[in-house]
Image (cartoon, rainbow, N blue to C red; front, side, top):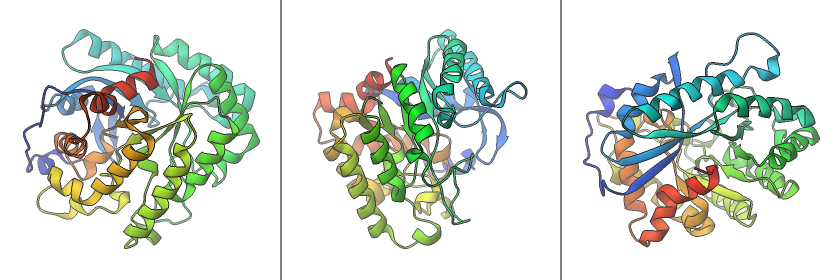
Length: 331
């Protein structure tokens, strides 16, 4: 759970506060869950903490589903909820929620079109795609995604049929799986080359459960999987998700939260590998808040990204912090 009182023990002034940021990955819900409460006021508190965050993209998190009607259409409730919050951001100062990515069950195959059309209608022009997570673990100490997907989800014929419908409608797919499943994402990218695939959270390296204490091995496997995906020109990469406790960081166990230098000491080499491998025009820094707020503050995280990209040109940094997200989500 994100604990603001603890996070506030570490305050860093925002580096380069004028640098424009589009945060392409955050969540929202209006109730308490394992990550606490995170609604529009919480988002505004983070995006207004010193960095120049001007637009954001909401990503599926299972919030506010419809409670009745056909089961396959219930995720549309999330889009309705977020569209209302997006309208609020347009009326008030601060970052605007400019795009929405919700969930649809791609194993519906051709039948997923009905769900996607309902999302489009509910979003008020903001709907850009779906995330149907494949993150799977048979280790109880490693959380699988909410719907407990099978290990081979991305390889299922019905799923790929649904992915083709997604592509046909000009929508994108968020691929969220763990590092040892990157071959599944690769197979999907090759099987449906017309589909824009956004790989979440630097490929999902894990450092808990059976992967605890195996950091170098996990990073080597992650780099290999990402390099293969980068060869598919229908993929882009979200560079973030590095402060989730499941990555193995122990910052949340310390008296003080991490500094931006602490973040770079752990993840700097992987961040550089990602940017070099995909190129700045196919990478976008992401907050993944409030989930990354388990161990690191919003402001410190973006300071780390700014430090990690300091050697790149102004145009390359514009891609990393805003333009890749704008191209990907058409905002």
